[in-house]
Amino acid sequence: MPQCEMCGSERPSLTTVKVEGAELELCDDCKEFGTEVRTESSSSQSTKYSTSSSSGTSGSGGSSGSSSTSGTASSSSGGSSRRRRDMFDDMDEIATDYDQRIREARESRGLSQEDLAKSLNEKASLIRKLERGDILPSDEVQRKLERELEISLVEGEDTEDSEWSGGSSTTTTLGDVVKRKD
Image 1 (cartoon, rainbow, N blue to C red):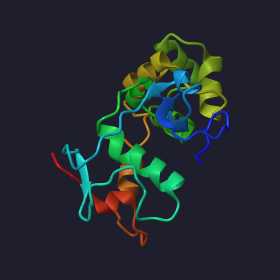
Image 2 (cartoon, one colour; image 1 turned 180 degrees about the vertical axis):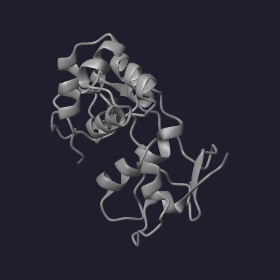
Image 3 (spheres, one colour; image 1 turned 180 degrees about the horizontal axis):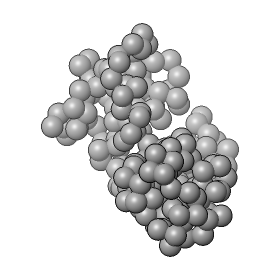
């Protein structure tokens, strides 16, 4: 009998619910803490993504041994085009090396931390903390920095794309198998 991923109780049927960005299999008592994810059969409706060997049983997990893991994985990837959007879908991820990007851009323009702070109308201590990586920039400060220094602090827009273009990976990922139906 499947267990609720939030409270651990065993129930005959569970519902897929999105709670703070994570899709969980929850019982009826716990499903009120999130937004229900509607999973529909891909045989009755076309999805945006399909695999070349799609059998039309999205979310059942019948072909692999463990139904709890494969069911969750396939419903989160296959159901992504049918689920309700939430605030996490629109958020940009800040680059892990944002502190280095800020420092290098500032130094290449010959600005001191104090000069940059004045041009941004912010405190110099904020620039020091950002360049040390002690704090993450707020959305407003991020926009100011990107405009003033002409850089991108968003993950994947600066150095990340060039790393993926090499194609030297020998392992197959889901992105290698899935084809978009635009």
